[in-house]
Image 1 (spheres, rainbow, N blue to C red):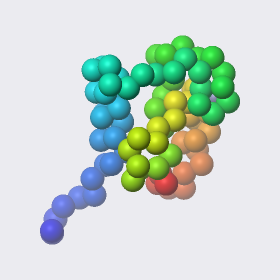
Image 2: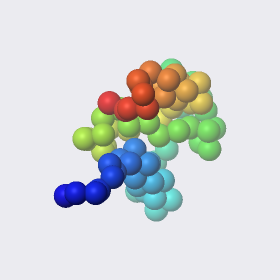
Image 3: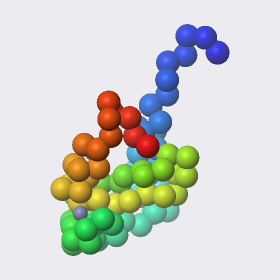
Image 4: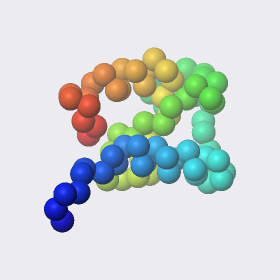
Length: 78
Ligand SMILES: [Zn+2]
């Protein structure tokens, strides 16, 4: 311990998802996990509702993702 800065978990997790998708380990749906709207795969954004459970990932359309990001106070994600 000591001068370690806090690890940007969010960025790391997102990188992991991107890697998984690239490797074909994780399949992207074609609909938003929140509103169910059909969304182009390249527009769907992965959203981790629970960072302790890496498998709980939601795929959100740009609109829902914006809303989800907005809800976190001070840039914190829970
Ligand atoms: Zn949506």
